[in-house]
Length: 149
Image 1 (cartoon, rainbow, N blue to C red):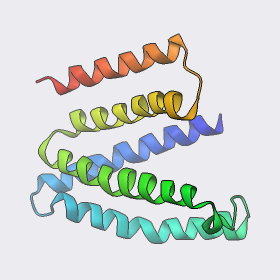
Image 2 (spheres, one colour):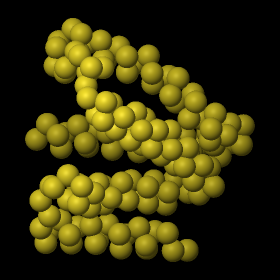
Image 3 (cartoon, rainbow, N blue to C red):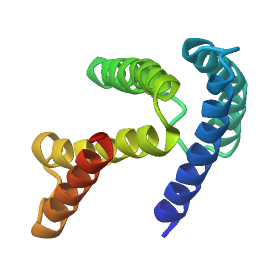
Image 4 (cartoon, helix red, strand yellow):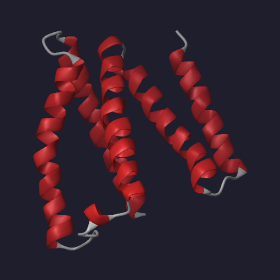
């Protein structure tokens, strides 16, 4: 249940935040890369504060993460940092600059879980069943419907 609550909160934060972002981009006074830079600059100190509380203060996560296996660290840096962090944000904010938030947000944030389900099954050995496969199919159908003009 905790996972669902945090997922709902993340969706709400992102949904509201991206409406603000689209409003900012719509003014043409700020571009998408500037918006990402400001977003990241504002988020970074908050994230390091939360890190200090969760890892250093409460000990809820491993403190010696920097000594993880090199393959693990490379996946963190390349996958989470470069692909999901920088690449995803640059592409998303650029799309948001050109399109309606009501179209762009659902497309980007529907493909992310569909991709994760498929890769989780193929690369991580997570279980796949008819219900998950149907859900991915419905997600992809929704993306096609939203993307078609």
